[in-house]
Image (tube, rainbow, N blue to C red; front, top):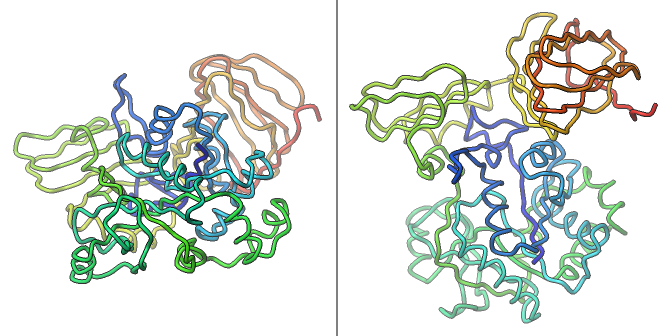
Length: 438
């Protein structure tokens, strides 16, 4: 089974746990059997591989999320990198061209497209296989998953099937309605449109060539930032006459708000938190190394991270995005392909960061022109290279790099360092990468 997982968005509705680099799908809140926690993308990827160990998974995402994906899923997962955010039709077109031209998937094979972050059980992934099988038959150009609605929602578009059969042609599509209209749609047998569908690669390649006028994957990638922002629904689905829908009646949740996210938590708190006996319906997610104590609260969500602290009534939590849009803040935490970093202190002329490198990983060989750096190793063992000179490091060692020095560090074991950046213009853009041999 070929699967394209769409991974986009900044997840501002889940601030302070999410930001432009760390979207909601990377937040680790789901309890695992070993007592740890996994994220939405880790959970979905694990469920796919449990259902079909041979499934070929490709994640369509922006370049800002690539490091986090490699950090959480490893280097083996396929990634179709979007140079810019241009909505779902360009993203799906690019990923389809990537599958065919880069990964060698034949044009007559079926592929399933779905969001990276639904909260679902194993029957959902069996349904994805059913969608792929139905698309492979060629009875329709597109096969959609229609989710049987559990309440009249304003958040989803609706599919009106032509019959009540398990597989049906589609009569029409409806935009996101108000509650009263949603009730009317459901009375007509409407299904939620969850953005899950299957097709043969040739179909979308032909549509993309017609609408985007590109020659091959490289041409599409190079012109990607100039493409019109348009959704796959508007560009393709609503104009396609040969389309089917398959009913899905299993659990399906979109964890896009604090309310829905905390409903999926296995326990009321994550991190260091204490709730007294008077608290009712309270959830705490704490990523800071300080305790949070809640007393006498009811219907409240508390979230603390290096980005900030949120204390909100459950009902009000869904209105957070306009407030967060007004906040201009440096990224304080990010997962990278090699590990993670957390900003500890920000001063005029200096920035202090705690860096954690995973065993066997290293940073890029790079240099900064407008700042000096100091690495103070606090635990683990590794190897530092500065301007081609190699030396082992361990807890207690200090390495100083002047502006312009090329440097990197390899972690033999998990390696933790305090990095101090000193300069008048400290910026993430002040970084030049080099080949280590040079």
